[in-house]
Length: 492
Image (tube, rainbow, N blue to C red):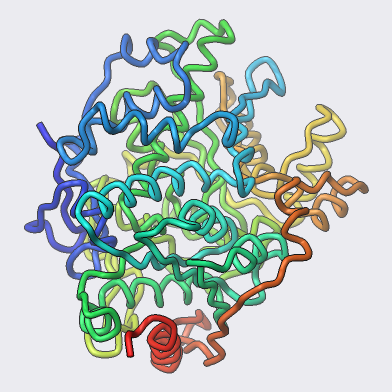
């Protein structure tokens, strides 16, 4: 049976994969999600059979039920082989100890795990647009790595333009240049604010059919490539399946045995993908969720209260998220409901993170172990792992490593464990220098962009600030963003 997707804020909406992908955001400002009991199941024999497969073949096995019947099996495999061409986007698993492994998801074109989902999204979107003679403008907010990955994946596609919103002073130069030097059909917007402000602007644009119609003469022109998008979420379910298949190949006797995933988390896309994988039948004993000093999730598991705080800077810049969008999917998955109260006229968030139905928090505690890793512990962990194992972690990977250490100390048991390493250390030379006293090698692609001309459109209006001190999108920012987009795209 096909999998159908509904809005987290409107259970009556039902969409197939193609419609959900093209829409980007669901009705009533919700996110597209499948019913938990509709998630396809794989047997342990199916999963063990992935051991000799390539990444594209594993992805085909995992994802085909989600895209059927909008993409048939014969068309789907070439799309995946193109997206996951191992000469362009290799994936490696490295043993650090007998039971600790690092899944390097950072060897692709922009040296970030975001390449995997972005390349899937771009190819599938272009497939639908080309087949049906449509155009789309992809709006994406980024806290660092998403923007570069999506921009690279969409660069030059004839049916797609891309607007990338990034916080002006909260990402590294290397991350910024991966968006601003591409030009062509890629338009990078520097926003006065943090990632959460960028995300609010993106959600407001995606929900504003009147603006889309005014600007493009098409109320459906705008779509999303953030974790908001189903096309970005689903491919993240492949990571743990591929990791498990490689542990089998390493002779760990895991055919049916359980393992641990340690996931550095910000907007919770990689975590939510792993939740889906576990529900499909992957034998994950526990999901370790490491966050930086933006600690809303471990606080929620501990207290049952969802309280948004002003975002705090961290070396793991892509995880500086105070209100993760995928939390809405997670809460619904465990039987609850959370939403943002929106002013329908200004698109401004009036109240963020309104939890009106509690999820099964005891079940969540059984599935997750979550800790906050301090900024100092980022550096200490990078140093310790380098000194002991000769491995240079990036700041995000250090959160995954430290969180796994905390889990093992708390639980007092060890199982084979996989840490997601989500970015190349060379994207963070100052942080690595601070941690180990030497500068990591700069990836070749980043070196090439170092002296290229940048094209940046600045949103200078100040954000609003709520009573807690949290930055929110202001009406002036939204107006300035829409006016800038009109100047760029509106037909005379």
